[in-house]
Length: 190
Image (cartoon, rainbow, N blue to C red; front, side):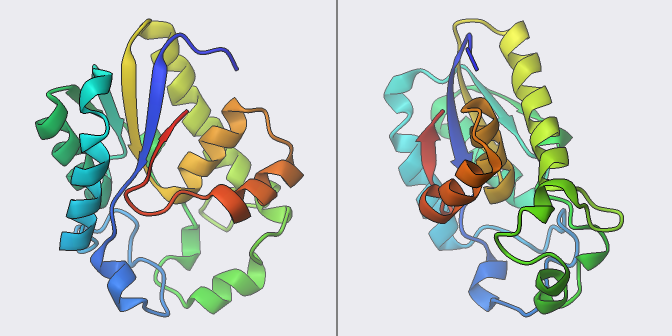
């Protein structure tokens, strides 16, 4: 995919949910109870320092609390204009929010190609998520030209966006997820 702007991807920092490693998924993906830890805040400050010389013009972020915290740290450090967009939200696992992880993984095994097409009830498939992520990127890329743009989101959506931009096949996507999946607070050039 040919792009008119320079893009950086930033996954939100480490959260209190990841410290506890509960057997449950997030109570709700937008829960304000899921927030950056001090480690997560430090990860973002370190990542943002790497961007200071790049001249970031705009920041687009998920409107979920942990991503908002991340984006606001970047906004303060970079002085870029910040926009929140629900298309950058985390993957919606529908009825499995708040249920045991083993239930979700029993019905949607890790690494299964079915997840590209099969959506959990009241949730979305990987392709559904990729479609919304790419719709934002295409809209921003039509509207803004020659800008440096930071996109703040979550692990799966960023992985799916990157794979979509690079026109990866399903097999390439799954391999990339195993080898180059973004860690908390990780920054990548798209």
